[in-house]
Length: 416
Image (tube, rainbow, N blue to C red; front, side):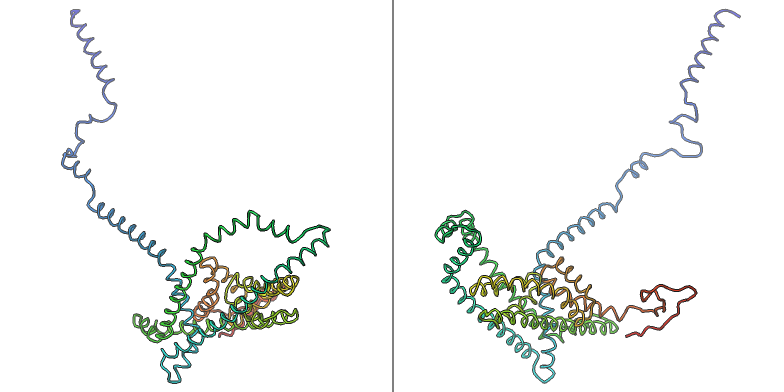
């Protein structure tokens, strides 16, 4: 063979080796279609990359639901004060229902009966407030007139006890020129408008509660018919039974509060009478009502007025009244209130105490006031629908250890 042919053969073999190195190791080339599969068209690729038709509608629906949630949340926060007032009015109407129902059963129109009950409560409240207001005003005037005498007695006691040389003029000048007194006067002057707005807001709230409670009590049967008209007959009996339970439990709660107010008033009347404090009957009524129907701070608010009046007689009498208020409050919280409330509204003392704490955490003073009747109503209503089983006569049920070889026996439990 000629030398030229050998050179060409070697070049072709080198070219084939280069092609084998640069070619992919497996499969055909990318631009060649697979066996049996048609090539992908550009229209199909564009259709697969297009947005789904349901996605815009889903996005609009999500935005609409979020806007509705925000609107509802804003409306609820704006109307929460009105809703609480309506809830208070509903419980007031439940408390008035027994008296209004008795008067209506005797032939009196329900609206007139409700008006008479409200009129009696209003007259009693106004008379009590006027009596206490006149007493308080007279005692404040007497205390201001006798203040130099009280100050001299306190200064003499301090000088005699601690061997100091204080004088009334020095004490008066130090008080009048003190920074905290000037700041207090300035803050009081700037807070007059806030106090006025608070008073007006409280009066408007009382008027709202009065109107709603009057409508709930006067139109109670019509309201029950309106609620039952949207329910099937089987549910109507349950709603009417729950309504009756709510009336009984609310009345029982008010009865228990009234009984505790009577006991508290008698106890404080005895103390004030022993100390010789004037206006002892009115002060006893004040302590009994305020301490029981204003939760959380009612006891301390009620005890402030007897302490003030006792201070006008003797400063040490105010200390005695304070000590008695603290001791009686502990007795009432841990001994009297749990047992009496549990009997009248038929709930466990621990449940009553826990419901007050939960109501205070959720709705403040209003929640503490209506928590017990609400929990008692719910417990009595659910008690009729909770299935109960027979309890085994196991010693461990009674808190005793079971002896060996003794098996449990089933004893039927008396169902209410």
